[in-house]
Length: 361
Image (cartoon, rainbow, N blue to C red; front, side, top):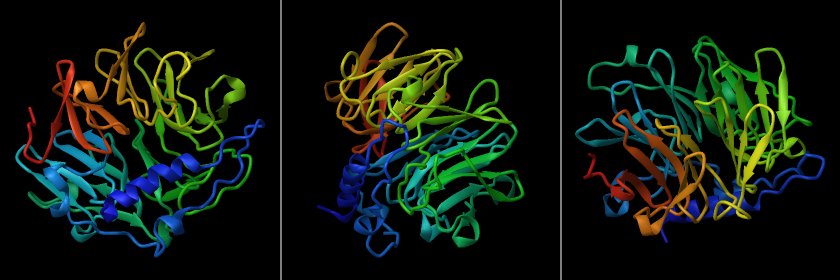
């Protein structure tokens, strides 16, 4: 077993061991596994040339397409991979990019790209980039975030950048980063995962910001005040992996241990392994351009929900990723999925594996 595969195995295993919530919606403090996972607290710089079978990476965490149509893939140890229509390039520590594990990708209204990484936040500023040269602005180290690991990033309609760290939220107004305090029941601290870890930040149609947590449910911020949503309000689980606002105004919550929740502004509708899906670990939720809701289910690939029924895509449909971490639809309407097993694209009703050599179309 390679170092890379051991790290991925440990990461997935340890996530499942994080303590669950109490009946009062205030969880016990999760165990800090960072020293066990990586005793030296250093980043392992992996060589893309060692990726087996010409895969983009053994583990794809994010898929994103920028304003110019370039595809970006966040990996679990090789930094960010970039496909420009001709070839795949990698950017990590060796190229001046402060990150090996990429946990979030966003684009601001000016077209700048933002990456959440294990070492901080990285900005790709198009205006300061020479033709053919990739330059990055790194926000990392104690001077910015006390060396916190980051798990999510979001650019709102006003150009503010929101980033979810291991212990809470930070906001960048274009000039400086500052902590953005959510009303957690208690102060959180840690270096890997805590109850306040935010795997997802999103903005709804009204401009409200939504923040997931790993034990306190979800928070909505309307610009002045907060509203918390948890199991006592109807949310299926308090450990929330992803939040999206769909085109109809619904809010969807993928959770670690409770399946999928849909919130229509008044009531929650929950879809779980008891009635709808194979497994209650839902790491990613996504809406395609036809209004279908796609989501992962650990060990069962992905599901498509058209508002009436569920369609499952797994190994029989060619999706060689049982632990799907990301779903994305590009500007050409192609649907992509990635996770532990590489990168896949939907063709008709079947998925095909896309390697460095394609097929890209």
